[in-house]
Length: 474
Image 1: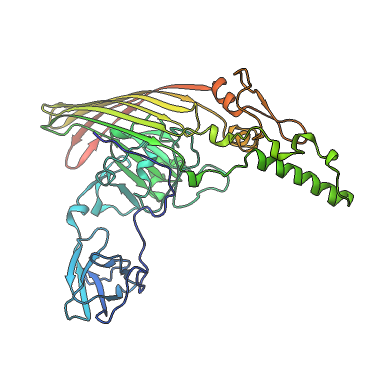
Image 2: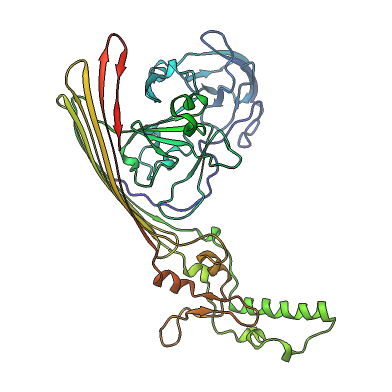
């Protein structure tokens, strides 16, 4: 069982600090015993490896190799160097009295033998010639995720994942290798278990059901999916039962989301706002009429700021100080016989950073695969979900955030009799808005979506390495 405490933070670097060639980290301090070491990194065929990481173990002092595979680094005496590159086995070298080293990295055969889903079938990573990124689900671990788009963040080179909205349950925007169109949408095509579902990962898909994610990034994707794949393709494969395995897994996570104080907008209190309005009025008379206004000319609303009775921070009042996010999942997989099956149930509830907003999802999935004989097999996948959302408008000055930022802080939330103070401002040049807190509590805009996705197939194996697989998707 996983319990996590979440807070909104800035995302700096997805996978750590990038090291510059021939540059020493600011945390590395030179001493009399430090010395400079140089070398070259090549593969087993003698070809230079560009961009290999050379790091002094236990420090952040490091460089990357240049276009010739060459590097130069100042290190401490008897340092231990770690040399690594994606797709190759990392090595550690003790430099001792050496000033120059040559390193040969061997291909990681385990990585190259991995089977990756590409288009209609699968390939070994070593046989792939097109640009494909694979999200390592083991590296992601138990990271709480509301939708599949968050699993890709920082996991695939050339794939930019951005959060464009704070609405609970809202999926992130994914762009593969930059914007692919001047006017049209640049979102990639999502394909789940061979079923193209459009340019949205959909809030109905439970990340806990995902076995693997592959990202097709070049024109090869258009040869399979046509124009729909011109912005790239995200291939999602859901979990299936392993042969000879019977497993019941359950997971639960509970977290709290909030906006840190250093990320909140600093608002004027009642006295400061009255002083601001009075000074603005006086400056207007001075500029246009070239005179000093009398006290009686200043509107009574802000004539005496020090007598301001209320100070309401409308922005802070609409924020949820401890928004809960709950995620529960149960999966049963059975692969003991010729028929293998997986059944999973999931529940997600995410409260929004704004009060009276939330996202709720109930999901269920069943994957069944049967082997009739050595030449014929069949499978059926079905998933259903129900999502419940309470929506609010967030963009523009007339939306809830605009109301809260511009509403008069000298007005109270409630009248003296306990009823809502329904209308804020609207006089003496001050913009008028509905009470933001009342608006969120009294006005309901709910959305309920039921989704069912199902596909079945029959796979016939004949001759050698030939397979015929017709499928039906609904």
